[in-house]
Length: 332
Length: 246
Image (cartoon, rainbow over all chains, first blue to last red):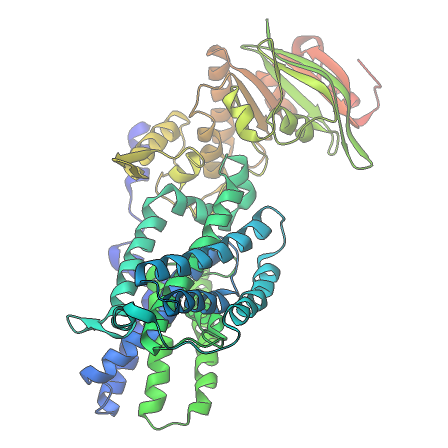
């Protein structure tokens, strides 16, 4: 009797190939690779080192924030304020450095400002129980307005004594790879490890799937939610610091509407807006795909007015494709 | 003597009186069948004992000491474990992780602690085998049958040295063989001197394992009798109101 039980338990249901193909991020990755291959054939400018450098650096900013957004979406929430958080973080960095202080202090202050935004979001969502959409929608306006107030709506393009260091951080490269891309890779690895290998990560998945069950089993749900929104804001803050270094100047419209690209990237990458599912790999690939589409339209000479059509259609297609795939699995 | 004492437990939800002055005693090694129609207050009573709600009036005493629970974890720390009617499982996590949810096993590298999946899978596998269940620790709960999900929920209660076990409709959605296994488990727990409160609609199950049966009707306790001095007919009458009190 127990031997039969052991056999039943040990039987494998999927091979490795089956497991890979059941992940939505795999198909998006395939689409991205395919797009790159097609573009390399259709144009002679896509596969050049310069173009690839640009593409990877451009999508790095969205991808970094998409890491934080993925965690928020897994937990069952949403964060519409990331674009404004990026702006206020960059603005705090600019103001501090412009006043003559060093890069280290500037970065510390910028990230602290970002995490404060995240903490406020998290507190209102977790303890006061206002829906995440509403809180972050309000914060979207408040944070950007705060950036305007702090800077008196001026553009800041002088960053004091550590200016060169900041420009290297955001615009420079190491071993031929753009620094923001290196930052992305590091953050992606850290986030992925945290989601899979820490209790924090497991509990984020639990809250997104069945918050009540998590509460009943003793998971500190409210504290966890605050940490999730602080993490999202932190990624926006990091992207803000890097983008400031790359652009060489900070204006109050920095990051405007970026939250839409970030959410699109995470959704294309397989994150479920209902909560409980999402991957780091998917977020990065989703961001990459959006940027490859944009880049390809430019290289193919198609008017940039069409970008929105392509990106928007892709969001719907990606989710529809995944739905078709899972529906077919259920029928089999 | 009694490990659990409820004195005059009442619970209002706004204008709704879910429980009205329910008093109950439970001794270690005793199995109490809690029966009543839908809306009688059985789940509410059990959730109060498990720390989900605070009673509007009344006291809970565990092992002679007063108990005031603010959260389910407080009750767990006092030796109360519960299997909820909806099982409280997360579909997107594996069986083993669900069993350990809230008290996950970790391995440490200095100040860093990481999830000990191997340990949790092994321990959960042991618990499932004890329950004679074919549940696989690594499978996601999403793909599991009702019986397997029930095994996960019951296995959760075996993690700590519980003294009081509350089960809300544990045999409602599982196979015949599984029902026998669950009832055997309950008898096994009795021999380990646990106190068990079993909410069930299934008369044969209750009469098979319970020592006493308590009946709730519209929030009030209308009967509390040893199982051998009552009958399924009398209990049915008490549940429906045909018999007023016994």
